[in-house]
Structures are given as C-alpha cells and as structure tokens.
Length: 85
Image (cartoon, rainbow, N blue to C red):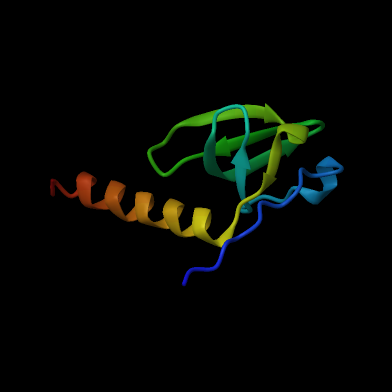
C-alpha cells in the first residue's frame, strides 16, 4: 500500500518564498530551487543549469517526492559532468 501526498496550495505572498526552497512551477510543470525573490517575481534554477523567472503566484511548495526527484536529477547531472553516462 502506498501513501498519497497532497499537493500544497500556492503561496499567498512573495514573503512566503525563500531562497533555497524547493518549489513547483505550474507554468513550466517543473520542480526547481529558488535562487532569488525580487518583488512579485522569483528566479528558479534546476541542477542542469536552467534558470528562469516566474511570478510567485504560479508556484507552490515542492512535495517531499519532488524534492527527492530534484536531488536525483542533481546526482545525475554531477555524474554526467564527470563523464559518466
């Protein structure tokens, strides 16, 4: 039997978003880490180096599962940089 994880609601204000937080961008349909919060906009980054900006209202906190997915992607990216397949 598996447990289901409910998706958290969107942030109510940009003050709830902090640098280093794992978030899910509903527009890009991707999980990422917050790099910077500037007004109503948030800069996000993936372990692959992809960086983009999005309005804070389009984000929600990442789930534990999504955080693990991001960690796995970071591990894969480090291995690729070392030359492993």
